[in-house]
Image (cartoon, rainbow, N blue to C red; front, side):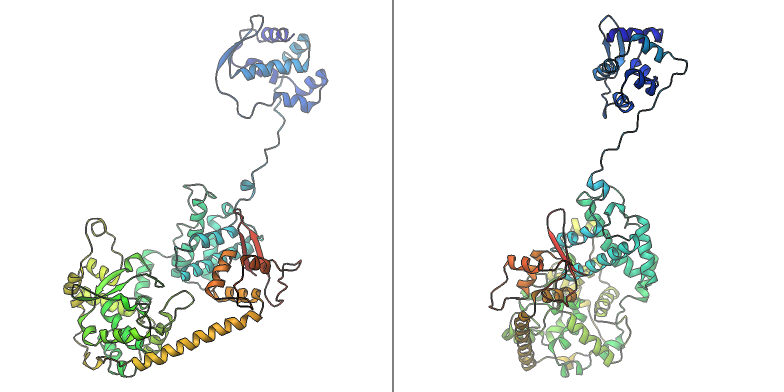
Length: 568
C-alpha cells in the first residue's frame, strides 16, 4: 500500500524527485484537512511531522520497493518517517493525490512545541550571595585577616545594594550587568566614597567575586567581567593623588624636632624610641618593625642585619617585603644591640609587651602613639605619618645616587623588570652595607644624645610585660565568665567585632572557638555536634531561643552542601 502512495506522489511531481521531496510534498498538505480525512486529532498529525531534534546530515539515496527512488535523503530515518506518516494516515492514493495537487496547497508550519525545561543553572544559577562565603573560604589562607575582613565588608555592601535595587534576595551571578556595577559606583560616589577608595578597594573586591565565579564555571571562560574596565581613577588621578594624598617625607627641620634628646629620655615605651630610629635607617613599615622577633636580629659574616620575614605569627604586605638588610652604623652606635640583649629576658619579641590587633598586626598601637607624638611636637600634616620615614629614607637614597633596583631591595618594594627578576640575583649584604645603607646620612641630625645604655629600658620592659600578663589573665577570666552568657550571644559579638567573619561555617566557628579559648562551664571544649545543636536552636521564625536579644541568625546550604551562617 505504501508503494502506491509513493508512486502517486511521484506522478504528481511530474519528474524524478530530488532531495527529501516526499516529506516536502507532505508538508504542503493542509493539516486540518489531512486530520479530517485520516480521522486523527490535529495534534497527533502535527506530531507526525515534527522533525527529530538533531537530524543526521548525511546524504544518501533510498530505493523503495517497486523501483521508486528517493535521492539525496538526509538519512534513512527520513525515508522511514515518510513511510510511517503515510501508513499512519491510511489514506487512499487518490485522496493523497487530491490533497497534494489541490488548487491551494499550503505548507502548514509545525505546531509550536514546548521548549525543553531550562536547567536550574539557566533559570537561576549560582547567586552572588553564595559567592561571598565561597570567596572567603578560597582566600582564607591567601589574604591577610585584615584584607579578608575588608573584602567581606565590600562584598556585603554590594550584595545589600543589589538586593535593594532588584527587590529580591537571590540574585544569579550571570544576571548582574556592567550597568549594575556602574550604578553601584555612582551611588558610592554620592555617599561620599572617594574615587581612589572605589578604584583600589571596592572594585578589586568585586573583581575577586566575579573572577572566582568564572574560575569555578559559573560564568563562561573568556567572558569579560562586568566589574572590569570602570575608569573611576585614572593614571592622571593617581599622580595627582600622590601629590595631594600620598605620604610626604619629613623635612630636615621636622626630623630635628622628632629626634631631639627627649625622644630617648622621655620615652615611656621602648617602641616610642626605637621604632622611629629603625624607620629612619631602614625605610621599613611600622607593621614590619613592630613584629620583629629577637632572632630576626642576626649576624652574617661579621655584618649585623635585620631579617624582615613573615615567619610564625608575622605577616608581610608583599612578597618583595621579605628581605635581609644591614643594620645602619648609627643604630649600632646608639646601642641597638644593647636593647636587643635586654629584651631576651622577656620572651621572643623585640617589643615583647606589644599585642597584635584583631587582624594580627603589631603596629596598630605604636602607630597610634606615634600620631600623638607628632601632634605634641607640632607636626599635624595628615600626610606626615610613620610611613613618611619610608618616603624620607627612599628619597635620601635617591638623592645620594642609589639606583632604583638597589633602593627597592633595601626598602622592600617590587622591582619587576625581566633583568632584575630573571637574569640577576639580589645584592648581597656587604653590597647593601657599602652602597645603600651608608647613603642614609642625615648631616643635620645629632644622635650623640640618643645613645641607649645597657639596661636603660629594663624596668620599663618588666612593668609593661607584667601589665600585658595581667591583661591576658583578665581576658581569659572574662572569657571564662562569658560562658554564663549563651554561646549564640558570644558568637554574635564576635561577628560584630570582626573576630568571626560572616558568613561562617561550622569549621570557621570551631576555629574561632579554639583561638578564643571558648569552653563550656565544666572547662571542656565544645564538640562539633554541640556547636551544630546551638546553631540550630531557634524557633519557627528562625530566632535563636538561647538569647532573645541576639539578632536573627540565618543560614543556607550552598551547592557543595556546606552550611553558612550569618546574623541580620
